[in-house]
Image (cartoon, rainbow, N blue to C red):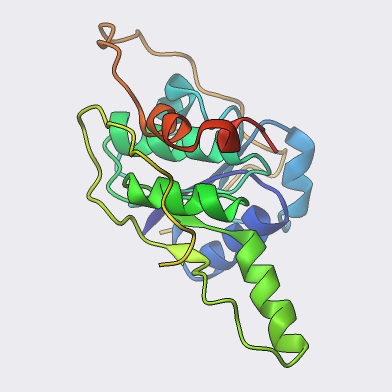
Length: 208
C-alpha cells in the first residue's frame, strides 16, 4: 500500500515508522526539516520537506497512485485542505483528516471527508481510566455522504457530534523535485472546506 502522510509530528512519525516496518510504501511530508528527526535512522520511506496543502507540491512528491492520504498536522484547517486536495483534485480515493474539534469532525464527515478526532479519543480514554462509560461520540468518523466532485450546498444547521520500500538517502530529507509545467488552470468551484465553513459559521473561525 502506498501511503502519503502530511505532518511529521508525534502521531505522523510513529505511524510512518510502523507502516514502513510493515512493508508499505510511505511518503511523509512536513514543512519543517527538523520534524524528520523523529523518524528512526533505518526509516525506509521518503521524507520530503514541503507544504502538504499545496497542489503542486503534492504532485511533485509523487502522490499519483497513492492508496490513501492521511493529514495529521496540528492544524484542523491544514488537515482538511490537504485531504480535500487529495480527494477533489488529485484523484486519491481515500483520505482522512485529523480534526480536533468534535463538531467540525462530524460536519466534515457529513460532507464526504473521513475524520479522526483526538479530543473524543482522549476523553473516552480518560473516562475509561476513571471507570466511567465512554461518551458515545465516535472518534473515527467515516465519510457519511459519498465524496462530491460538484459544489456542495451548506446544510441549514450543523450536524450533531454523535451519531516495497524505497531506501532514503542517509544525508537527510529529500529536497522537492523540480516543478513541472503547470496544467491549464482549472475553473474555480466550491470545496468541502468552504461548504463546511458556511455550515458551521463561527465554529470554523479558528485555526489550531
